[in-house]
Amino acid sequence: MLDSLDILTQRVAPTDARWTVRGVQEVSETLTVRQDVAEAPQRMRDAGVMVSVAAGGGLGHAGTSDLSEAGLAEAFARARRLARAAGSRMAFDPADLPAASARGRYDGVVQRPVGTTSLRERAQLLAEVCAGAHPDARIVDWSASLFSTEVSQLLLTSEGGRSEQHWSQTMPHVQATAHVDGITQTRSSAGQYNGWCQQGGLEVLERARFAGEGKRVAAEAIELAMAPPCPSGTMDVLLMPDQMMLQIHESIGHPLELDRILGDERNFAGTSFVTLDMFGHYAYGSALLNVTYDPTRPEQIASFGFDDEGEPAQRQHLIENGILKRPLGGAVSLARARAMRPDLEGVATARASGWNRAPIDRMSNLNIEPGTSTLDQMIASIEFGVMMRTNVSWSIDDSRNKFQFGCEWGRMIRGGRLAEVVRDPAYRGISATFWRSLAMVGNADTFEVMGTPYCGKGEPSQMARVGHASPACRFNRVAVVGASA
Image (tube, rainbow, N blue to C red):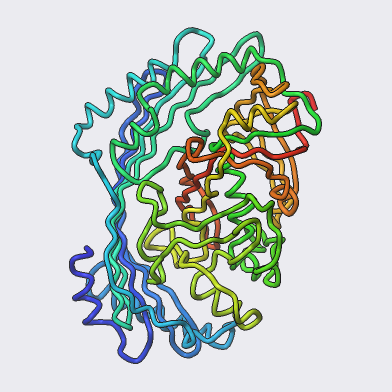
């Protein structure tokens, strides 16, 4: 499909308007073994084109899965009609957008393609991992799954831009539920929504230590079902990377999306407590907080060379030494925001979830940079507190400010030493002040690359794959909410 898109576009694209054409092809496979029974394999192929046209003072989009010359011509015509209809209602003139003339190619790094093994071999691996998650009758539900996908994308623009990109993504998952004396607890390999998602092939399974995850999550599920509830109160909290992922996502990523700040998402996913005048001076966190937008890390799931508006992507700080620097905003949102804040800087992070969606401001790879503290040093510094791992629940207000997050796993820290395991730990806070309680940031040895394939946003809805990497982090005097609260 992408091989012919160049030629077809040359034949049907208008010569009197600005436009982009983005062709996407995705092939994916889902394999699941649950309670030692293999479910039917799922395979999917999806392909289509999104056309965007700036005409008559407006901007219009039209997608099509008809990949013929006639289908592409009709998509251009529909996009132009929509652009003209929107012309009198636009908050900015699309003619003011920067020329999308970048050219290049991005190929994600794949060491061992999933397709180098047979379906039988992949199913056998899952069966072995699943069997390991059921050591005895205390485990009442257990499963192992593997999602893999190959994505190819070609973006062409009227200014001569041409970006071709290819990604391979792999997402393993293991989960076990234990029931002991009336208490039920679930433990997963990295969150019940596939926190282990990276670019690459079978090497991702090795990085995720997938072969041994069944035994680990089962043992920890049983341990949790036999553990006392987490106590409530104000105490220090040590969050591990698989919980930091959710903390970053909800209380930094979403609030910094520029279209939210401008009010676009208020009818669906909410707004933001962040305002345009905060950039450049607002103390978002303590001086230890350094947050980067980093599309360059090869194994992270949302790495790319160009965003879906054709802008070259590069690593940049969003928060540096605690100070808010720039939002997550692509070219379209920046054109609107600069009418009120001319000096505002953005990043190339306009993305669409597929060929049938237009690009919107999205998180891509949003990471906390490592600090200097070892895990042992952070534990030793806590007189009374709790370590929390692996998000299981979240609640946050429409402006992404007040929150309460729950974790699968907790372990008390007393007198600078790890103590008993506790179940159902949770904590609450306010984004605008929580990050200022950041007291220690783990070093590179505590750093893990994770993410989520299920970030929902937009009207119509888009489900995006987002990367988050973080070290372990210690926070002072946090409101912890235990199971008995």
